[in-house]
Length: 137
Image (cartoon, rainbow, N blue to C red; front, side, top):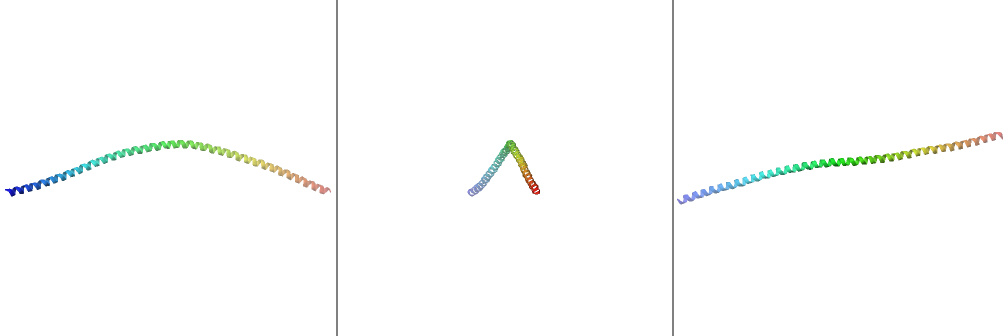
């Protein structure tokens, strides 16, 4: 009677609480698995978006690098022409100055030679005159 009914109810209550505990554990586990699946999907989507953005950034960098290279080569080409013209101008001025200086040195050497020749001729004539006068007297 009563004791058997109480034992049945106690066993039924234990079995029911075990099933509820198992259901709760399964619910928590399924929720965890679902959350992890959603998290992995979100991470995968975020990674794909990051990779696409990174590829666009790298492509933009390449385009900018190319454009800057073109600009710099243009500017440096213009600057190189200016420097070359300046170098040619300086070289032309230096060569003209050097040539004129060399010619002036030649003129001075010719004048010095003329002066020396005139002085030697004077000395030789004077010596000759002395020799002639000493021989006569």
